[in-house]
Image (tube, rainbow over all chains, first blue to last red; front, side):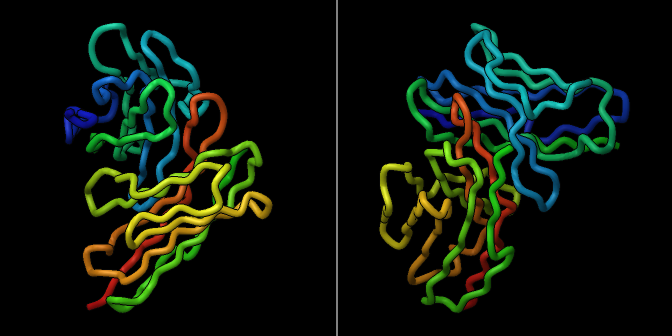
Length: 113
Length: 112
């Protein structure tokens, strides 16, 4: 059973470009969470999604950030017009429908130059 | 909103000694408390968790205790080994869907 997959693992973008981060949950998991980790800090919740639904986006910045989890394919976190402050590690986690345990992917390390 | 405080921020112990990390949470509705270990540049790994209907849980050298009345929970690592060196995060679940609020982390160094 493959774990949570994320790609790319490293992403470099110039200021003003768009970043797309992908997350494939573990097999059988239908809940996806995105967290952001700034250098030498803890993880901050961004958004919680189920298939085709955003359940809780209370941690997402109001502008430039969006997330989706389509019926087919991975969940995508999209950051438009990136700024240097967006540089961070972005982790997704998945959990089964009735479970609380969240398992993390390897993360995408975004660097904005 | 929910807040999770974690102490200490750094902890150095001698190999073989025990290590204890403590967390407090603010939302009395929280009912799930996981602990994650994160090595440099790696993903957070779930090492143990506890639900609010249980006071203590143990898995080999790792144990977690929960005091719901006082709203605090602790991680105990016995017989520490150099490979236990990492950053440890506590978390508390809140709201529908169990989103996690994390503590700021504890850097554990085990000296051999």
